[in-house]
Amino acid sequence: GVIRITDLDGKDHELDAVEGWRIMEIIREHGFEVGGLCGGACACATCHVEVCAKWVPKLHPARDEEEAMLDEVPILTPTSRLSCQIIYTPDLDGLAVKLVPQA
Ligand code: FES
Image (cartoon, rainbow, N blue to C red; front, top):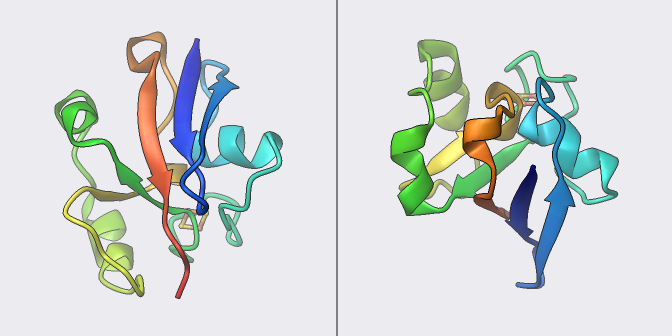
């Protein structure tokens, strides 16, 4: 499967996705800057992305720890998520997210 990302310059990219990988890891493995400082422990919020609205219902809702970290991000969007808290599964084939500036 694939995921689609929009980078900070507004360019779209299609990335090969591997089942069981965190979206953060998939983005990082392809060489894009997505933070991930805490390694996916839901403790840094640098892996923040904006999820394309039509995909939001397909994702499990954010847990309390994730909500708490999202409160800390510099630029919060209505569909903000931490990309380390979304694990890629085949039903997310085509998932579209936008990278968000860290400040
Ligand atoms: Fe740190 Fe996602 S990588 S919260």
